[in-house]
Image (cartoon, rainbow, N blue to C red; front, side, top):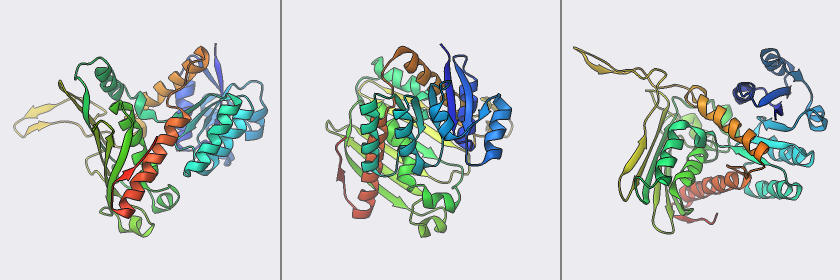
Length: 331
């Protein structure tokens, strides 16, 4: 079976998914739609697909699934449209910035029986997957503490910050999902601290650039998250899980994994400096998993409910910062 795809959105993340879909032997990129014709045409030229309108993709008999890479404020409406059109749906996070809007959208997904996968690509990173498998194999015993470090090489433009929903909903949301992926229990409390240490303009836009979060489960397991919009040494992505019998960790990745030793000491090449190069394999793996779920009729994960859970944790973190207290959550 070949799953035939329509791509909605030909921007930066759209290009990533166009490559992932086109590189999978079980998939075919049939059409792309974008508000900017030149952007859509560039993908069409690169991968040999059609340029169509969203309406045409919605009505098309030769498209089985769509990948939604449009601006966040369009996601929920598009999910509902394509659920009703009978297409399988992969949507970049988040479904929406408002939890109630997400709930309404997921109700439509449930009523139509549509398949919906939310793009938390880090679950499909080979290194993080190996951490999860180590936990499942019982090699470190019961999980006790999870530490997640995620720091960007540099802050995005302030114009992006203003429409992003804030650092917790835009950046930390990936780490909230990863914490749930690794803890084995749902968080029940959130405590967060936030500051503006990188760029004063981010503060003027009403956001933060440096945050720390502690999640706690009912049994006392903890996940500690550290985020910064600045890492002068590259894209910092590390995970450690401490258990009753040991610890497992995933280190930072480099474009070339070598080490040089000479009279000046030991040196290694720099880290990846961009999420699209750091997570190339993850993007390919998540599309492959989406295709497999369509073929097998299997339950899709991460689902829309996973997207909602991560958003609720993000909302609780912001509330914690504003009210300077621990916030109870129910996922």
